[in-house]
Structures are given as structure tokens and as C-alpha cells.
Amino acid sequence: MNNAKFAGRVLSTREENRYHDSYFYALVWDDEQGKPVEIMYGSTAWPGGHSDYYPDGWMHPQIDATPERRSAYEAYLAKQREERAERAARHVANTPDKGKRVRVVKGRKIEIGTEGKVFWFGKARSFSTSPRDGHKKLLRAMLGPDGKGEKEGFRVGIQTDAGEKVFTAATNVEVILTTAPRFGGATRGTT
Image (cartoon, rainbow, N blue to C red):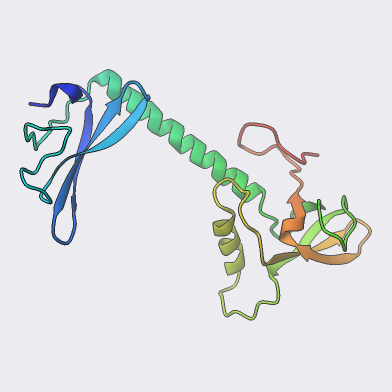
């Protein structure tokens, strides 16, 4: 039988086996926070094998979440997936890949406000043996899911509307979104 504190709230259980000891966790729905919380309910690392959550040594919780809490958990997971997808779409939209239109927003060699199309994107003075297009994957990894991470060390080649080809740091440009992206919220630089 479950501890009364978590009765009707246990969504799942798991065991983590480490080199010398095992740790036991339960995923429980927290009504106050409106999200799942993982608690450790036992371990072989200390005598008695129980934690402060279960002073009576309760070692095997039953998965007994109520249908309402289970549906709240599913809604929570769906919201998390949607937010991750939006961050990923924003990230891809803000990466200055070849063929995208960009605007220079800072720097000292190219006039701020200059617009053009990216014809080259890569590492500055890099002599690496990375695979083709590996720099795009690396930049996407560096930018992070919010699309505002580091772009240090990357440069873009821009063909301006006047036909001139110029190079600048990737941190000096922002992507001009020509169509509304899939994600919600305000779109900077939309034309």
C-alpha cells in the first residue's frame, strides 16, 4: 500500500543502479506545482534502505495515479513537447544558413542596416577536417534551443542588394524572416 502522502499520485517508478548501490525513485504528481516531481524513496546506500519520505521503510510504491492526475500529466507532457518544438523551429529560423536573407545589426566594417542574401556560412579561418555541412550542425548545437546562443567564431558571406559581396561575423547579423514562422509570439525582422 502507498504512503498516504502520495496515495493516488504515483505515475511511475524506476531504479538507478550505480557501481555500489541502487537508488529507487517514484514519479509523483504534485497538485500544488501542477507538474510531476521525482522523489527518491529508497536506496541500498544507507541502513534501512529508506528515505525521509518513507520513514517506515516503504520500498515498493504502487502506480496508482488517479485518471484526473494521469490526464493532467499527459497534458503537461504535451505542453512540454509543443514548447520544445517551438524552440527548435525558432532556432532553425534564426540560424543564418546559406540562402537566407540577413540584416547587419552591429559591427564596424559594414554599414548597420545593410541587407542581403547569405552565400557562404562557416568557421572563421578554420582548417578543420570536419565533414561537409558539419559547421551548420555545430552552430545549431552552439545556438541552443532558444536560438540566442553563441555564434562566436562563425562568419557569413553576404551578397548585398547592390551586388557587393561582404563578410562579417555571424554575431553581427540577424535573419530576416520573410514568412511567418510556425511558432507563436512576435517575429523580429518580419518583412
